[in-house]
Amino acid sequence: MLEHEWGKEAFNRFPELIDRFDCVESPYALWIELRQVFFDAYKEPRNEDLIARIYHYADWCGTHPQGMSTEEDLGTCVHVCFFEHIPESPEALADMPRWFSRADVLLMKDTFSYMVGEEGFKRILLAYDDSEKKRKK
Image: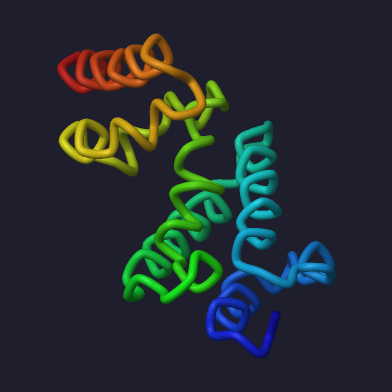
């Protein structure tokens, strides 16, 4: 893992998770681990710092150019191993408006609806409606 830029960056951002990364040999395996850590971070007591660091690492991965192979394509990896799964967690789904604009969600409809389907995508948009109502109060 540490011989790759993505692995070094993950180690720097998540030193407390290094034991979980022992068997990680690809960015896909790393993001599968991070996805579980992300879902666990929403359990009480909620770990806001870790949630933010995972989102920021996802952003960092997304700034890299598309790879020559799927193994090297960090943006695709984040979409497939992380973004697609966010709506599977009710807590993360409710928190999406903090991390994605409604316009982003609409642009990424295929990604966000992949695991939860059309009905699940409607629930995502409802989270935005609920968030908007709370802000107006």
